[in-house]
Image 1 (tube, one colour):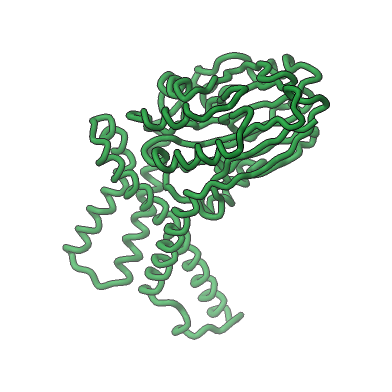
Image 2 (tube, rainbow, N blue to C red):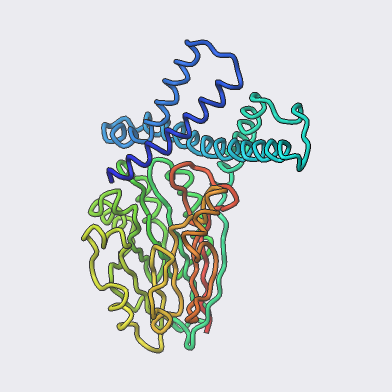
Length: 378
């Protein structure tokens, strides 16, 4: 955790230093204005770290307001820095080519320092505004699967998946009600959550519990842990999940309905911390019965070796589909199974949800939130 904190401070402070550098180069500034901006930027770097202590202290309205300020700014500063660096690279490349005589570019064609600041500033503000709206519009992704025998004697058995809801300071109340309404519209037979149901801040969430507990599914609601269950405090996160009406599968499986076997394993973060429970992946695979349609719930979209012999479908999340472009370029390199539907080399289908909520900035850019509707037909 200390290493993560140091990395956060280094990276995030560097982005703010870059913003300060570009602003100072764009305008003639006084010592007073530079001091004010420095104080403001230091405050924004520290704000995300102060949110939980403020909330725990009982200042919920202050924490909520600060959450939006701090995290919308976080989305903005990432996009501003990326846009500015792209402009720097283009300008530098053109200058090098001009000096080498490959392509002569008049000096007046290069953008001024002010343009180098104002253009990414304007574009980032537009993109954050668009991304904020996109984050609030949940899409429905649909997947059909086929079983050898009818599940629960039905021609179509419907499973709805949510993932990475990150219920906390931002994903709550009206936004959570819209998500719940979208789920209920689909009349799920079974509801599953593939990890990160909660965020790092889960105090004072009685309203969220009421909304999630109110979602009905005749054959039950099941969940697995994600890395944020660990960050939030495992005992507290598991109790929240239970109060929302979910049964958490921790290295175990069960017949969720006649003809449907459901299994789930703890996220690897818990195993690394010595908190993992139940059977590991390899042991769990041996228990999957023949004949039933078999679903594995696993937070990270990394298939277990040999899973195709034991399961027909794996449901995962974790990646958020990158959440904000251009981070999707990085997450797609880290996770080959990144978003959408895949068939593994062994022949198992894996669906990777883009996530239903947001982490950090309440912004999604070309990676809209989703609930997944899986119809199992015989």
